[in-house]
Length: 138
Image 1 (cartoon, helix red, strand yellow):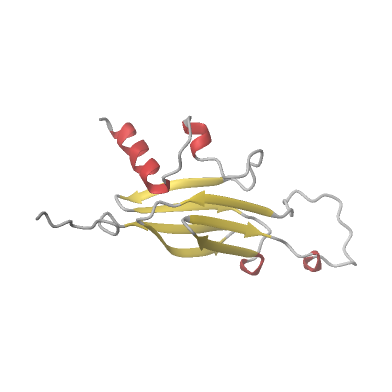
Image 2: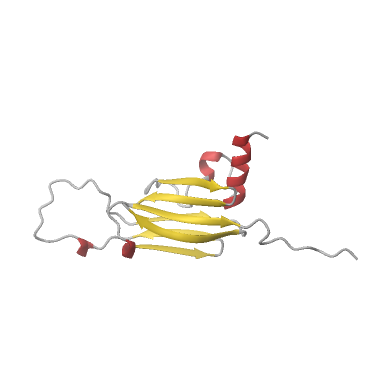
């Protein structure tokens, strides 16, 4: 198995989501949405991160939930964030609500989430032995 196929297998084990094609594999659960864009990066053998472009959102307007093997990231900007006295001539920053969900393998743990310069970074640790159980042979 070459390095590219090995990485593909690692990513499939990381999120453990069943689908037919690779393109569908990494899409969020909700179809038809590609906002906000994100990258999936392998930092080292067992450490991964998602970088998500969320310019215009503060950390107070983003919620991250991990429940039943699913990681969900929700962003919702308040209308109160803009002043009534300002006259907008052009608004190029997306302000719409978003929700992205990712399936997590049972041996993956979210270790950190931070927001810097409009990029949300969520780190994961994959523990090879977390769900391993030795069965005694009698």
